Amino acid sequence: MTPSFALRDAFALGDLQTFLGRSARVDDGAVRLIGSGGVLAVYTSVVQPAGLLDRSPTVLGLRTFAAETQGPVDSVVPIRALLDRLARLEGPATGS
Image (cartoon, rainbow, N blue to C red; front, side, top):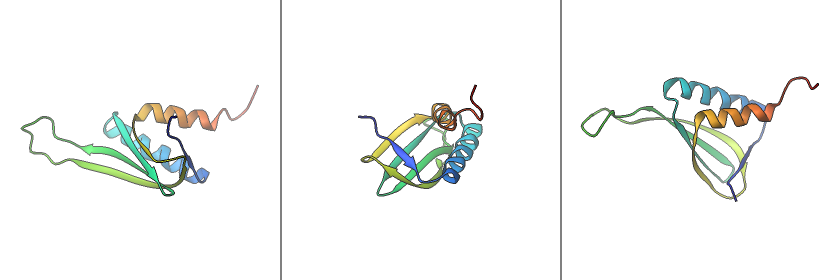
């Protein structure tokens, strides 16, 4: 079974979308989702070394959310895929 989570309110959904959108502008890679005990942590890379000899530090961005999870969640997912999934949750504003 694929791990899943549910955010507790619409404000958290909007906050997650904003965080992911900003993350995608810095590095359009992936985010790591870790959740259990009513908390979902979303990690993204802000600064990373360019190679083995690069002495730049690794800097991570972190946002936490109150969430309900079905079992522990520990997944790495593409930012764009998660943004697309969240956009589909909202659905169209008007139906035809």
